[in-house]
Image (cartoon, rainbow, N blue to C red; front, top):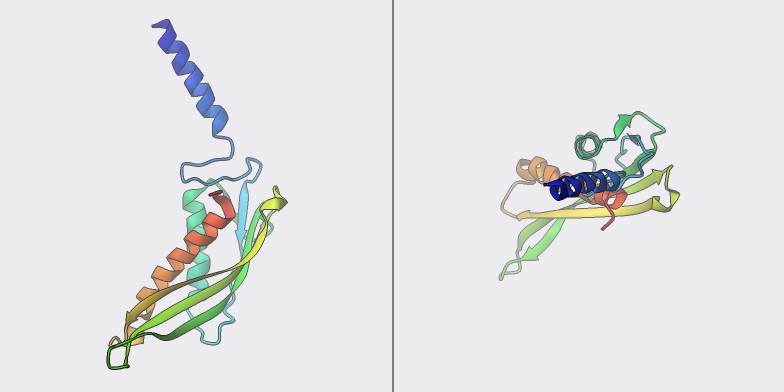
Amino acid sequence: MKTRAIISLLSAMLFAACTGGYSFTGASIPPEAKTISVATFPNYAATVNPQLSQKLTDDLIQMFSSQTTLDVTNDDGDLQLSGEITGYDTRASALSASDEVSMNRLTITVKVKFVNTKDPDADFEQSFSRYRDYAATQDFSSVESTLMGEIVTELCEDIFNKAVVNW
């Protein structure tokens, strides 16, 4: 009985010692980092979707709010995300046997700058790109919102993982 109590106590102490800068989502954040600021991502793509900038920014804020203990601030966070939307393109991606376009592809590209004031070695500037294919028989305006939402979700996951998950 006494051995179990000691093992339980040691396990609890070990768990408490190991949780410093980690969360159950796999995020690795310096323990002294308490805030994150996410600047609005302006849209500099040749084709502009008027909802994209706000959706990307809001989804990034939501991801960091829900998956970390960081407080979101307007600017000068311990961690800082900024960037711009550089691409929003739809193009043919597949041809049918009769050489007609059978699939189209929506691609969104964002350039991201991440600053970690507590660990400058974690800073980066990188472009992220994701796409979704859709049938050429579908009207783009009828699928655009759904495709954009799915792509933005994946972009946010990529940015989150690069910023705070050490794979």
